[in-house]
Length: 333
Image (cartoon, rainbow, N blue to C red; front, top):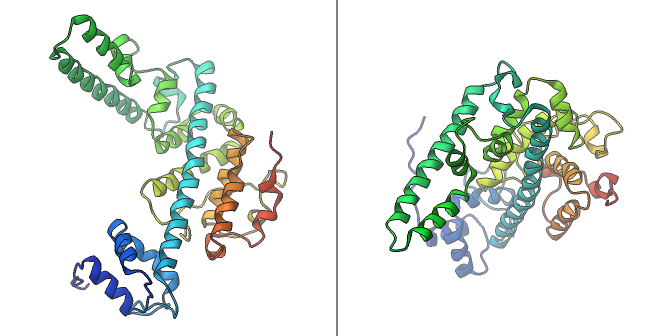
């Protein structure tokens, strides 16, 4: 173990360091402005493809330019935005799928019954989380009511404002209107959960028949839906934290379809680890066709990659002829 000795340096010193390492900077004012908005540390992973491998001084390859770094950074940012756009649609559809199956078949407060879940599922954590959300929302509402009471206006106006505030959030609305059951109905509960919580809830359902019925709504078998929700939780968190994504070796391996009749790219039927972002983008393309049959999402992905031809497809797990696969050209509904 060593003692950390690297000094903190300002933006002008950062530019000088990059130049000493052999990076060409055509417009130093623009480069400085960029580093004021995107830290040197955040930009560092985007430098590595342009640096000499295993070089302890982190020198750049001959001819490398600062604008190449920013171009790659912009590509990764836009890839995250496109990915997040699809995850949002899939997440909302997953909530709807669970709600539309479990509510009509098991009742509006189905999730309160511990028998709905596998014995290993932490049912109490779910209830405690929801109770805390309602309690916090109620406390916030009470504070707002106190502020409203201090306003210099008539009682009719105050009551109107209180009713309006109560309806802004169902977690605060439910306890103000109902005393039993103590927790909100299932369709509202599902909207309060994070994607990670939703994935855990689906995995924890006791009956395979429920899992199969929910997964079928997204054109999946239950094991695939369980795996894909877990995978998309990880990817969503990467996007939400603006983490590098384009060349990352994913720490999670989603289960992939094995049946030849499943609409899936030929490349992913072949043996391999498939731990790059290509597999996740294929998952999202399939799911987007389920939730929005008229989607142009795959075409938008192609257009993004076409705009950045210098980005290596191989580092993302793409085959060179990826867009020729019929998987990306399903007829629109």
